Length: 434
Image: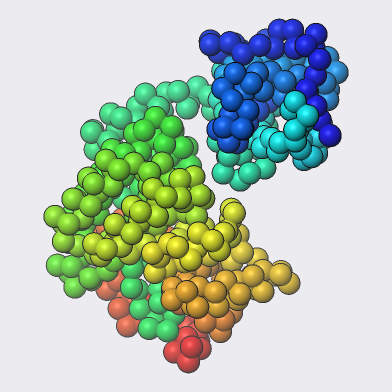
C-alpha cells in the first residue's frame, strides 16, 4: 500500500500556477491523475490540491535520484534515468504496479488512476521541444488506451518538418493543394462495388506528396481538422454528382476525427452541408473516438444517422473494442482492422477473431467490411466466413476520380479487377453462395 510521503520529502514539489519544465534529459515522463475530479469530490478542494505533489513524490522515490516537477493540479513531469526503451518500459511497469493497490490518504483508501505518457531520445540531435511533443502525444494515447504509452524519439528531422507542415497546412486547404482519392469496397455476395472510401491527399508545392500519416495528426492538434473535414465533405458532394451523372450512384464514406464528434458546431455545419448536397454519404469513426466523450459522440452520431448518413465503425479490433459502446452506436457497418486480415491465412487465432467478429456484427444487424485484403486466399476465406464487403489493394488502390470512373466501367459486371489472378476470378462462384 502506498501512503503520503512525509512533509520533508515534499520540498520542491508544491504545485505551481505556472508550468515548470524539467532540465534537459534523455527521458521525459508525463503523469496525470485521470480520476482527479472524482478524488476532489471526496477529499475537498484544499486536500485535492496537495494530492499531485504527494503522488509525484511517491513516484520519484521509485527511481532514486530522479526528478519530479508538478506542473498543474493534475499533472507532473518526471525524469527517471533511463538509457534505453527497455529500461523505460520497466520503469513504467514499476509505477503501474506500485499504484495498483489503493493510495492511503488520511487513513482512507482511494484508487488513484494514473495516465502515463513517456518519450525517450535515442539520438543526440533530438531537441527538448521534440521530446516534450512526443511525451504529450504519448499521454494523449494513454488516456484512450488506459495503459502507459512510451515513444522512442530517434531523430529531430521530423520535428522540423512537423513545425513547417503545421504552418503550411491552413494555407494548403485554401490554395487547392488538397485532393481526394477513392478506394472501392466490393460487396462479396452481390459481386459489385457498392461504396467507396474518400482518402485525403496533400500535394505540397515544395515537399511533394505528403503522407496523411504525417499531416492528419498535425491537423487534429492545430484544429485545422475542422476546415479539412468540411472541405472533404464539400469535395465529396461535388465528386459524387460526377459519379451519379456517369451512372455510378455510390455511397462515399468520409473519415471523421475523434475530436470532431464532440464538436457541436462542426456537427451542425456538417449536417447542413450533407442536407444541402442531397447525396449519399457515410461517416467512418473509430471506437476509441467514442470512448473519449461517449455522451456527446453517441448523441451526434444519432443525429447523423437520423438524417441518412450511414455510420461505419473503423479499425475494429485495433484499440479497446468495447461491447458496451458497440451496442449503443447507430452503426450499419463495421470494418475489421487490417491487422487481422493481413495474417488471416497464416495465423491460428486471427481467423477465429475475424469469424467471431463477423457473427457479432451480423447479430447487431451490421454489415462487415474487411480492410487490407491483399491476397486471393484471404478474400476467399472471408467470403466463406460470411464477410459482406472487402477493401484493399487486391481489389484496387485508392484512385483519383477519373481513374475510379474508368475502373467502375471496366469492372461493372463483377465488381472485381479484370486483371485479377485466376483464384480471384473463381471466387465469384464462392461469393454468390454466401
